[in-house]
Length: 432
Image (cartoon, rainbow, N blue to C red; front, side):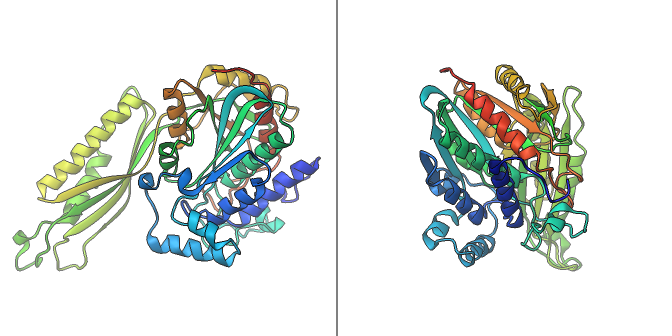
């Protein structure tokens, strides 16, 4: 890929152009006001229904919101970018989700596609060999970039909705769910709670890249881990570190004990697990017993039962250490996802469609993705109601790993994804 991708049709040109525009203007989770406004502008006159803001994001269920000043900064940036004040107000409090629906000519299934929107707090490479930099569409926002392909996901979702609105020769309904804050697995919960996936028969997750070459697709994933992200707050009592240490209750020592205890949890024979303490802050001065501490950590497992046991043991570690030092302890779950369970019936149908798309050269029934994604909350919600779901991967020949300053996608992957999913939707002609 050279930043000057050649495309063969005008609609592919529009798809790539939209991805590049989104790439140049990344936004962090729950701050995707400009991104949501662009989606609304692109689809307002094309789709049958378009909902956004608190209608599709249950405000009470928003988890892991950024600080108020960060949300305020996002609102100011959106206003400076020319977004209408009324729209900024509707989207500017973490509720940036958008749901667009297009109905076909015939009765049939409701098929939903989740497209995540957020960027990452990473400074994009300015290496001359980095295609977005060379092509003039690198991030214009200091310290933030699309380093996971979410710009491509949004562009695919918008394009798919437009294509089906232009030619409604399909059965049922397409519902595109544009989700905030996938990073940290924070955004899906509020949209699920608001009913964004209610009535869906088939739920699709999509991810570009994941180590696959362009032209390769996978109709399901394996190894996707359940996860919880925790913020642990410890409350103790201050005291003079030399004159009266016994009068204090040391939150810093409690936090250190928790960090070591979590990393000492034993592995499970029947599943893969991960534990990581990523951030810890405590205290105010060298001569004062620390009266407060905060820990940010995550737990993961690729088996639902094992994950439940892992989280139970982790809570025991936190509460045990807090009790040892006489501390108050509070655990807030600020992000979560489930194990991905992909239905073979849907995966097989997607695999059949993959063999009809010219630019797909390698169609895999499944591929591993040893990470976490809260699209699984949508999938599980649909499956609990009797529907089906799968999580598909589309190769993008990324020159660097996800979440890296030089991450990029081969833009040939964009029409491949759109063509594949369009073909799938147009061939599903049944009721649940």
